[in-house]
Image (cartoon, rainbow, N blue to C red):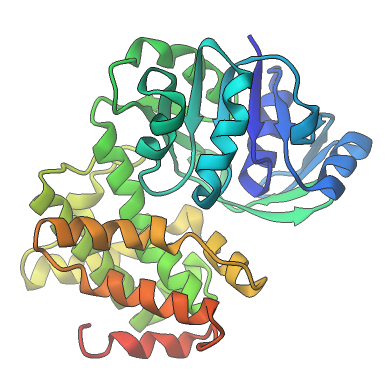
Length: 336
């Protein structure tokens, strides 16, 4: 079986290094020539919550040859159409593209490769790209989990993907995959969205009382949109996040607020990839994360006001009209 990670940035480098270290064979593919050269010469160096270096197979896209049984897609969603059309000749007959992107990316992938060759994975860990062959794992190693599933009628193909991902962490094959996607989307909307606006790590969001209050309100808004859409959020790492962090009434709201730091304790060092893009002057994926919650809310006439505020404010940062600062939390004062 041939496997590749297309988009070996922060998380792709960590995943590829772990798979290789634990006996798997996988190609790490990236357009970053400097990164690929460093991976070839010195291997992949993983630091942070883990510390090891391992030789890996690293390729530029134009160096890909033949067909792959599994391609793990770990690029930004903005380029999905062009990337997937490029990958089409490299997908084996009966092969699978597993999108490990944030949000709800499966429809855009299936539109190009076909439903029978598309599955997805919600990833419950984080990493930061350091470049030149190095990436930092920002989630504790006892919390490396994957929620694997499909929106289509091809569940029998998930076994090989699960076996590959299990070389890094725990894999759960989700029957309620849209629910698993929504649970991860909800956490991304609350923590990655606030991180992008403020520059805070997830731990700093928990420690700042008002930032945590904003994150809590965004979580609640996303859960309310899910209910309106008939989506049942799935457990994350064995915990029913909708029941624990969602609330109806003052006591459950108080309890949710105090549980958030406990729920995020294994992920305190994560900082949003959207923040990294914004701070580097690049457009980010806000439309594919908070924008998804806002869009679903509009569909069912359940406005996702906080998510819409995050989307519009992040676009202001992209246009140079707003800085990344904790002062951005003031935009929520009318609502939270």
